[in-house]
Length: 124
Length: 306
Image (cartoon, rainbow over all chains, first blue to last red; front, side, top):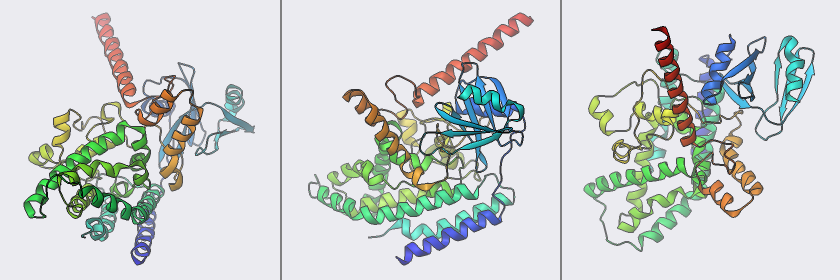
């Protein structure tokens, strides 16, 4: 029990150290090419036909030449890429919110500007 | 009985802290506090799982040892032989852990970080006992090595594998890269780049991969992209620990035949009856086709330019 508690303390110290040392970045997508590269790397052979970036660079939606719709979104200081299947969508102003039905997947909100309703229609 | 992992734990903590500082000062590598939190909590949970199931594993090892073919004494030279054979057993376990979904469901936890640093080494499974990975060491006990010696060698093997989870060390001397599993070789193992998928299963001695055709050298022109083919979209350690088991349960529930159910459990990770998902072999084949077609396009452009 003592060993377990000591391990807990050591873990807390290491997490605090990581935070204090500045390992808490949030990535930003600067270009459509970057989003396309991420999708291609995650989905070998994926070719983007159209890319819409979140206006703050927090993610992107892509349409592939094969018709697949793909989400790129941040997780910590890295990116997660998902082929979108069944997903609930809602639009509020210029923001599109995606709510995947599967367990372990979080809702994602992207500010897509005037493209938000276009993507909502595609995903509906 | 000497618990090598417990003895090494203070050193693990010190080395993680040292690597963090080194990276902050400019050494190669990267950390994210959220990712490290998940890794460390999974490590803590793994220790707890070991405390719960460890006695059962020891009891089974002792039971198996009663059926041993020979009596092998615990000496320094039998310890060396046991260590090498245990590493071969680890290779077999580890290769199966990547090629059979049942074993992968437990092992995937260790690969689920998109980072590669010393905390990744501590990101360990909670369900190793359920996955039956301990069975791979049974032949050593049936040969006649004592449970005490086998568990000691296994502990040393695990402790060795801690320090190779780093980007800070680039290459070791040539002789070491030829014989041992090194940070470079193991970075390849954690890579999801098609050419790196399912390569370098070694624990301590990389010679097993060279011998059995699963070795791939790290190419400095292609840095490994760490993680899993379908990266997790949450830092929740519970989901990290159980997501593949949940996936197996869901797939088996929806399967239409017993053959399909068998393949979903004992087939390679990513197998599906309709081919809608990708195994490592399928990804590698697709990458090869894509790279051939790119090369062809470049070739025809060159001919056109001439």
